[in-house]
Image (cartoon, rainbow, N blue to C red; front, side, top):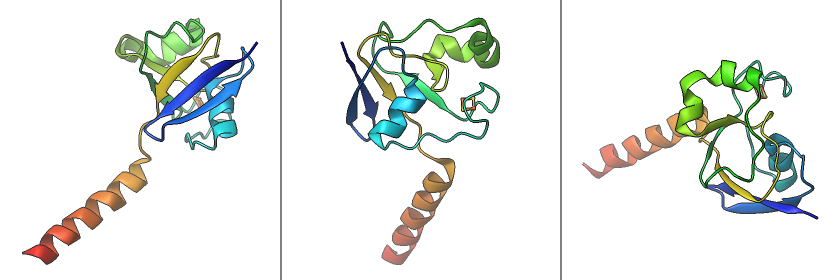
Length: 114
Ligand code: FES
């Protein structure tokens, strides 16, 4: 049995065995999720947002709940801790550096227009 994990906004779907973490699935899908701690639930850089009902992901453990606090209620999960137990859809936030570069380029284009 396999399950599908769909990553937004890239709209890439990967088929994995149940139990695989979202982080490992993202690597298989060639979707970049930032990490610094190697998947130990300590850097909090691997946050993703659950875009469906969340039934396809394992329930957050005590450590993940403690680390995320109220973000859990906003459907945020740690990709290194959330495991696929069914098909699911998650959204990966844009890398802050890429977002800053994109915003700067957009501003330059706007300035050039004026
Ligand atoms: S990879 Fe560091 S918290 Fe998930």
